[in-house]
Length: 365
Picture (cartoon, rainbow, N blue to C red):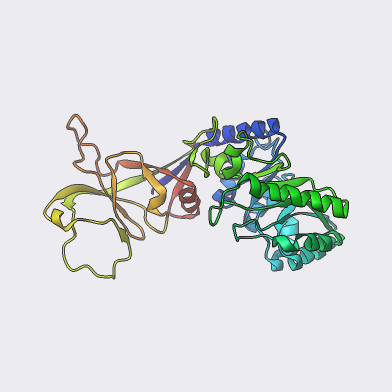
C-alpha cells in the first residue's frame, strides 16, 4: 500500500522549539493535534512528557481524540477547541479540562455536567471578530459574561477569537486589540481576572516579532506550525522549524507509454478528476504511471511531487495517474519501473486525510 512517513524527531524538535520561543515571549500555548485525529500511535510516539513539559494544554476538536489523549496520559491537560454540542456536555467535562464556547445554553449544560461530576470546568469564551465562524457577537459580550459568571461550576479563564480559518481574515493588530479591550472592560466591570487572551494561532506567529501582536494576547493555539514548520500567513518556514516532517510514497502499479488525449466520446459518467488536455496533442504519447491511491485517500491538489518531471493526469476513487514524460534520466537510463515508489510532500489537509484512510500505511521514523 501507499505509505505516509512521519518524521517523529523533527516534529518533537519543532514542539520543543516553539515551547522555548513562547517562553521567551511570556506566552502560554496549546498544542492542537487535530491533524492526527486522535491516532494513538502518534500520541504515544510524539507526546512524551519531556516534549509537552512546557505546553499549557493539548487540544483537539474531536471528543474521541481527547479521550485518546487522556488514555495515553491521564495527567495531560486537555482543551476542546470548538464549541461543544450541548448533548455531549458530560463527555466534554470528562475528557476536556478546558473548552472554547460561544453558546450560553451549552455552557449551562456544561455547568450541570461539571456539578454532577464534582468538577469545576474551565472555559474560554470566543468572540466574533469578523471571521463569521464561532463567537459571541461583540454587542452581546458584556451581557454574556455576566450570565456565565453566575454559574457555580464554570470557571471563565479567558477570552478568545478565531481568525484566518474560514475566510482567511488576517489577525491584524486592530483585530487583536479588540480582544485586549474586551478583557479590560470585563475585568473592570465584574472585578474578575481573565488569565488568557487567546488570539494567537499558527497564522499569527510571524507577527509577534513585528510588534503586531498586542501584549495582552498571551495564549496561542498552534497546530500547523508545530507539525509542518510553516505559518499559514505566508506558507513559509517559521524560524528554525523543520518543514520536512512528512513524506508520502505511492507504488507504481502500471507503467506504460500512452496517448495524451483520451479516445472516444467524453461523458459525465467519469467518477474521477482529470487534467485539461489540448486536442492538438491527440497523436502524441508520454509515459504514464498508475499509483496505488485515490480520491478516497487524499485530494491530489494537496500533494506536491518531489520529482519536477511528474505532472498530474487523472484520479479515481482508488488510483491516480501521473505523467512522467520520457521516463529517462539525464544520462538516458530508465528512471522508474513497476514496483518503484514516487514521493510526494503532503500539506496539512493531505496528512489529515491520509491518516484517516484505512488503505494507507503509516511509518514513524
